[in-house]
Image (cartoon, rainbow, N blue to C red; front, side):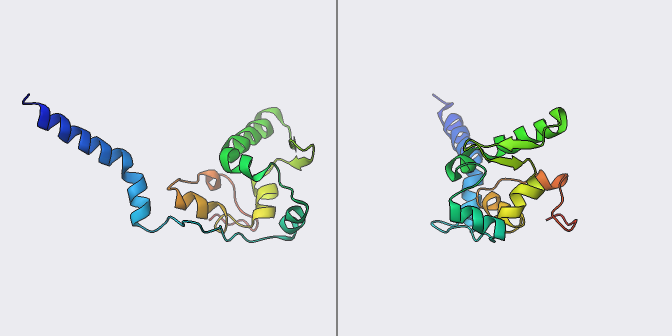
Length: 136
């Protein structure tokens, strides 16, 4: 019975630590409720959007873009494959700094917005550079 205060205190501290990233993100104002990302549309993106196309459907990309990028990395580096065939049958060059950035503009304008909003760290640019040789 004497341990009740210690257990409750421990649970409170555990809850605070587990939920800290969420509360910190909200407190710093990085959450953009209901706002659409201000992505820079390149000509390739405008043409793809007009046709309703992307590498994969937007819902898939939101949930699984890291899986796709990791698969691309493994296939390019380990298997020397360079072409991705999407679920729609279209062929794309497996390239973060080529295919992705061509449509979505620079990482600061697209990737960083979402990753900052959810408190996630980008490590792609540790190895890759944007066109022009700069890293974000």
